[in-house]
Image 1 (cartoon, rainbow, N blue to C red):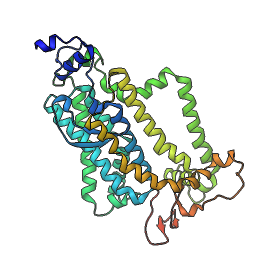
Image 2 (cartoon, one colour):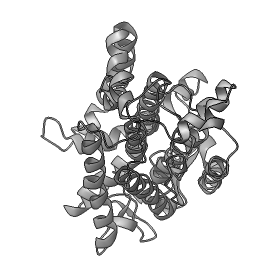
Image 3 (tube, helix red, strand yellow):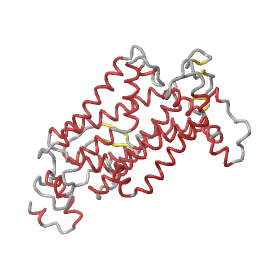
Image 4 (cartoon, rainbow, N blue to C red):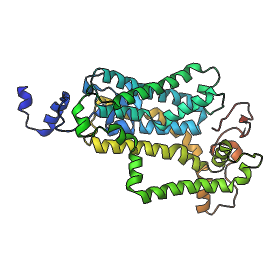
Length: 369
């Protein structure tokens, strides 16, 4: 105690203060948790230790880069979906279970609990849950390899993760003093921690209505134009007014860039935007330090990055055949470089498939939804 009181360096004082922050004081705001919310963790992967709060757990969980790359692989490289599935499953359970144990030991702040559940709720996690629901109703999906007939364990593990995630979020939002630095929840966050991590995009559209309306307008115009140009194909043999499944399938087959923006870019952008704005408002001292956990967080993204590199040779043909690229390069009326019958979602495959029967010529199956 005497050594602590004699500290004159502000940085050292804050470090010592955050080793055991008081519950009823928030003189310096939320103490940073580099193993949960540092830039290295958010932009690459997390080594979920919570050791700043006396909780040691050797769980690895990926965030922005790993989720983004895995989502791309699920969409464009069906052969790699199994490894991506188990990697994301490990990510979600690592974050959620580690948060549960840390909360039970009163070794985690509400802020970092919300950070953990927000990182776990990546777009890829939501896609996995959606694919499970579809498979339970007997629908074919691109993830039949992990959620198909007889894959009851894989389905059950994904379904179980959802109530665990909801439970952690609900408990975090309840009025409670069982978290670290409980005083900061009202002083800094005004008891609206979850709001600043799940609704920043709504705040953005409210603060910048013109910009928000422009972005929504461009997105709506792209979809509306695509549907209008394909109206004869979409409603050729169907009397239904809005055959949503057929609209989706025909539009993404003809305009794969719309699918990329709708499924990959926009959801991940909103997810990352929410996390970054929430941390910028509530905890500005999160920074990178060369600790074992944060360095490991960087290297944990290597396997996904290698898989992405293996996909890159197939990307140029996909890119040059995008409608807007063909328009800008004056190739609008020229034949495409790749045959659509050899593609899934616009990325060239090595075997031909029939989009309606979802059956490939070599007997294997490719799923479009």
